[in-house]
Length: 640
Image 1 (cartoon, rainbow, N blue to C red):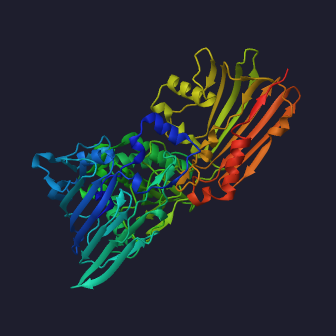
Image 2: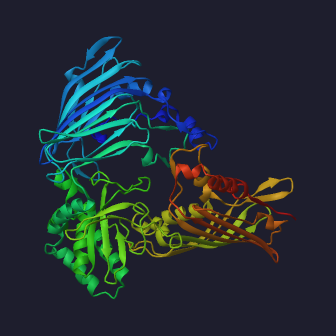
Image 3: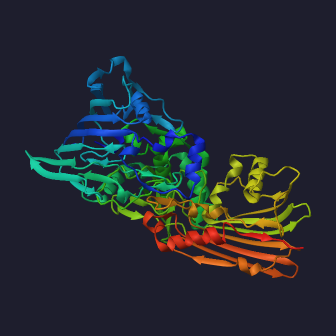
């Protein structure tokens, strides 16, 4: 019944060669639309579930699926049908598997069904198992059928039940019937934008019963959109959330007790040493937090242990973390919280959906599947609030990591649990400032001398690089990043890079000089130089009639001041341009000053995402047109 038990999505674009895919993905002229039956690789003829839930939250489901292969990718899917589950908490039994082709049934032989443990990932230990089924006669037009039982004998939170059914994402779904019979009282919330569901809730023999029926075909997939930065907004996804609890605070309190038992125990010696070192240092509140995270990362490396239900949800004892010098996000968060609390902070472990392309939404019913990561909410002695992710190898207390910014979070606490939202990144805090002087040589080469200063969250891509890369590798990376070219050693003139071996995130200034040949191009009026606009591509790489939301990048302010030495340009003021919108602010000022030309650019990315509705608004269309006509295609033509 759960969405993670459904088959993997069959992507239409995967069919094409990489070259054709690239043409489609980069084309701004593509027309977006909702997928139809003709686009589907799989037709879901039936997806039926009967699930029984016990009072302790353990449960058992009988799942029956029948799917028709419509295209070649459907054949690949049938040849490698996979069910994954956790061997510590669940057991899966295949009751029947067969192919139906041209009216004849072909049963799957037992030697074509394999149930084996999966090797743990490099990030940690696990008890994942995989059932692999190879269906015979997997021809286009064939139906593949499976019936299996899954028993969940251990649950993350005792005496509770959470689940979500999602429809129309795994193929063209024609029929689905889900029935849940629970000894625990259940509540449900339906997101049904297409009016495709019929839901019945009743009481039968002291059981809470919920029946969900798909009453019309559903296929929630988009075609013709750039896939690398597009997601379908949750409001378009047909789903039903089910919970035995009423409030998020109940979940926060229950897990808060488990975390409190770990955090409030005496600190191991290695962690006490961190407390002592920070106490004797003359540090500000923010610096104390950053020093704790930095010192903890020196002592503990990331390695998860998800072999048990407790291992997936509850941190290990701090002594075990300190002794093994290994831990995952829960262990890092609990350890950091314990140390900070000893220093006088109020630190609470917080659950979040981490990932910049993983949008989180205000969920009406409490659950545990809305989160994939543990971090911290820290209240300082000055009452300032810090959102801290100690799992990162960098430590930053004066900003917000982009992969957690703006996310819904559950703060775990026995007394004051809360369901709240992390602030977005402040674009005035995250900055990149470039000041440079460019000289045009007679052979078309450009000599560029300048400095690059990085502040706020933007520092994350540079801070700590020296812990991973050599000085030469960092210098080469910075030359490429600044020049937007692969320079030869002869073209690289000089570069001054600050110490990047510290975990604590600090402002960075890089000074450089380089020469790049063939930087200009010929026109009938003279040499020309394109004005850079690479930061704005994500704002225009959008399909016509875009449906999905696009990620344009974390909020940031970019400032660039360029002096073009001894150059003449007619009508330079015609390149001046300013545009304002809820998502982007841009201003360019160009002027002649003596024998030189001065260009000042200011770019402010104000939002991480632009919704599909906003992308179809007149305000966005004016923004896109303004970028394409006045910024992306702007150039200077130099006159003698």
